[in-house]
Image (tube, rainbow, N blue to C red; front, top):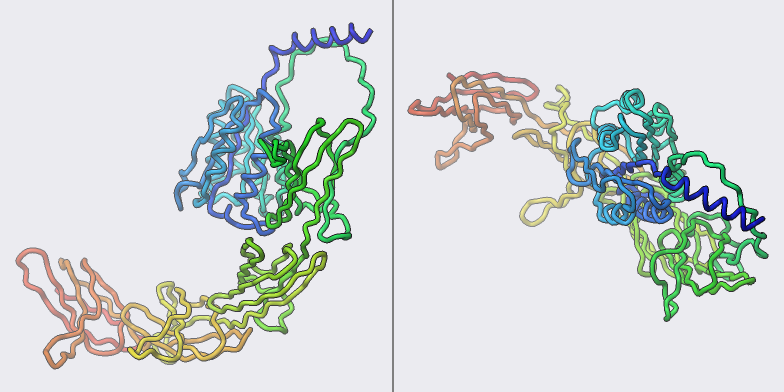
Length: 557
């Protein structure tokens, strides 16, 4: 009976083989500049490279996959969209290689990318699926919801799945319509584990085209194995400590072992968990366990028939929670703080509150808020959770400027504000501490005595400042200046000079411009406006007087 059933099953499969074909799927990957952002201490592009490479190894044979990428070649371009790998069977290695070489830098034209992917898949003629992986919203003035409705209306059987990688719930709602309006799914992926799950469901487990229905006898099931799993993996932070269990900060990579007991070839399996079980054919293997991309351990193991191997890793590490503050009294972490963490041969940078695993031993932290810096070192014990505050003494200045004392405020993004040291060097210059453009902007500054300077056009002003840690001050710089607007019909070059001459008879040039009009912000006083013309026309001059807080207009003709 069993032989007959097996024969019928084989006959049915052979009859159906000609009708089985994989759906065509295009992966559209976000390679915009924001993919350098970090999740749990790792850049999103590194996580995407690793997870996509892992998932592609389990894609069913015959699946036709392609890759389209946007934002990796130019900054600020909405047309930076590239068909990296045309859709076809057996493209997994080509896709992995291309993604591993990406360097994100541009904008997020996700709507246009999905539309181009649909066209390449001939969505109006054939069944087609697009899997969009994005960490940002549309930045190229397109409506993804409207596009999805249009594609659904024109397509034969078109579907878009969207993976929001690191998006907030509210941001996710703005791109989920691309999936919902085409009958697809939206996946919220906030970390590597969720990204693996989303890509597995949309790419590795994507349904094949249904074969023609054949009557096939089902073979009788084989007896269940004597043991459910032949390998049980486990990990701890310290000797005798509790299992890390479902902790997704632990990343396992399983390799076959070569003659020297070292990892060989491609990974057999990967898993994000502190503890899990698996089944492997009898043989020698190496498990590489990495904790939060920072601490790596290798453990060899061997599987045998009827036995259970138990690879075990002790990371010999502790959990550190660092809260950067401007003052010891602050209750919340300062989100403007950058924390550079280093231990052993590993280093990375966190922004705001940092939660990370560190090898037992010394840890060095360099914390900065703007130009304010502080460095600390401390020791971590295996198995402990160490919570520390890092106080980075810093204040904040809200920049303002006026044209005259009690006069009109300056409302311009062209004002250049610079904080300099109060003490001058021997040549009269001051060392720059930090700077920024625009009135109403904020600058983080160190504590102590400093000077805030402001420059607009040819006018400058300064005011001394002194801040305490955690203190925020609104500081107003008086430019003591007015605006001179010049019109010179037919002119080609306009120059503003001081009316006063030095002992040599020279006049100081304040500013100049090519054309028939020019406007500058100047200190109060008398000026000469000199206009030059093309051809043989002689230069002409006009006089002007500038008053603080006022606008003067002069025509030279």
